Structure formats: C-alpha cells, structure tokens
Amino acid sequence: MPKPSNLDNPEIAAFAWGRFRRMMRLMGLITLAAILIGFAWLYWQHGFVSVHVYIGAALGIGVTIMLTGLLMGLVFLSHGTGHDESIDDNIDADWQDNEN
Image 1: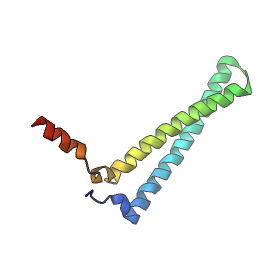
Image 2: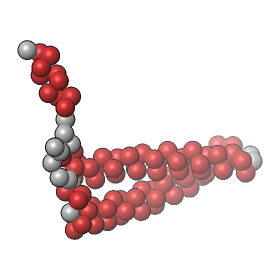
Image 3: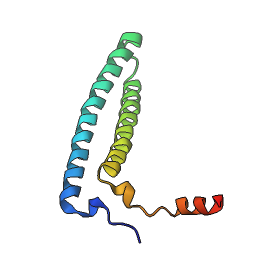
Image 4: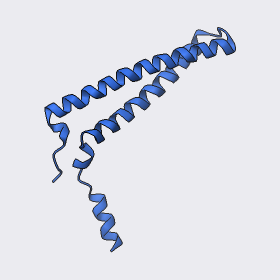
C-alpha cells in the first residue's frame, strides 16, 4: 500500500500550488523579456521581414521557455512536498531480487 502524499494535506497542497503559480508568473515575465529581446535581435539582424517571422519567433521562444518552466516547476513541486517518497517503488524490489 502506498504511503500518503503530503499533497493530500490541503494546507501543504495550497502552499505548494501557490509557490508553483508564483514561479510560473515569474517564468511568464522572463518569457516576455526573452521574446522582446528576440524581436530586437531579429530586427537588428534582418529588419522588418514579415509579421509571420515575428509570430513564429514569439511562439517558438514562448512555448519553449514556458514548457521548460512548467516541467521543472512540477519536478520542484513533487520533490518539495515529498510526493516522490510516497510512491510505491516495486521496480527497486524487482532489481534486488534479480541481483541475488
């Protein structure tokens, strides 16, 4: 039977998800800054080419940074609340049985 997760506790979960939301807001600001820097670099290198180039650059930069921040944030959330330790790891027991 798996151990209970700290995310089952409403107070701990509220704190953890609040911290996650703050981190995602910060990542949104960093993403916006990176997009603006990318626009400036594109304009400096090539001038105004087409609006489609700028839309594609904004989407590429924005999705990449936000997805990276989201995945890393979930890793931090899972580890910070002890949720990782609550998982029942049967694979480890299988490996130990095969070694003997």
